Image (tube, rainbow, N blue to C red; front, side, top):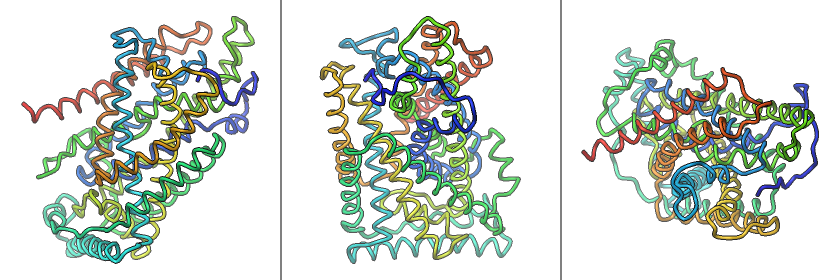
Length: 507
């Protein structure tokens, strides 16, 4: 895994905006991974539980990780080593010769595989609503649709009477009906199996360029559709996001207690998978290697020419990371506002086998009956992009991990074979997990919790790489160092806050 598969030889970095734009890509792949489970499901779930109160935490969750992302990318492209190889070289306890952070990463990646079970379950739900296969599936869709429409109608009625706005609406509308739902039949599972098999085949034969193109198109299309929905929502006074809502969301306050809900814990779990999640922080440098940044710089040389090439490609790396940050932060805020404005006001909470149908409610005030069809297509597309990218990423990283843990020997040919094999394994095992645990939201938030715990460890790794593996001629500015320390400290606070929130009930 040290060598770049696209070994195109050294070359100087582009200096024009157009030239730099052509070399971007790894960050967009990462954005494709996070704009699904993190934004569409976890972020909207937080908005539905907390209202506008925690928008500030969601924004910080997107912005704060980019400094660690760049530092990990810097280490990898300058050394040619992978992220896990760098982690193994950190000081500290090394059971069986491998750093304990790498062992925790292994636990996290197992939970993240459960997250992919939740994602493929969401895709299966979306497609089973759009194209039901059985009568059971049709009946399930009809009942969940009627329940959601009734809940939205309550808010409309109260708002038109002038008796409810947001917090008042929460108590006036009441929780969504607690009726038991019928079985959706085999429809979600059949679609999930079909998509898992198709994904395994595409990834087995796919290459970097195809993955980059597909993900960019999927993410851009869905983000634009969702932005249009939020803009048009402002024309409806019942659902519009007001300046007072935005002030509340940026006030650094905490939401009031709500029976049966814990929005703080949900938000902190969401913190782990929005923006660049812990998994994506590890994945990102692998995509930088595959893009060719390290091979374009070439092996370390103590020459001005090498330093100049490295400085240029580090500039491209920073542009790649910051541009992707703009994409996923924008989409995250849009989804949060939609979740708070529509789901929060209606006391609708996406969960279980009707998660996708509940999320479609965010589009109904604008698009009415067309909303469900539009959202189903969009949700299937964006969730699939996450499923696609994350499984492609995990295949590459896990193939490297097997060498790090001493489970196999490394060679270019063996690496390629293992990556191809894992490209088949991960999509299919995700489907199996969904079959045994058909709770997409819970699977995704569990993965988010594990990733939140991992974030402080990656912050430590970034700090260590900065001070122990920085080439003097390429030393970053003092301003950068300050923000890197703030980033690492913020990740530590978020991880500790979540740990305390999880452990407090036990005592």
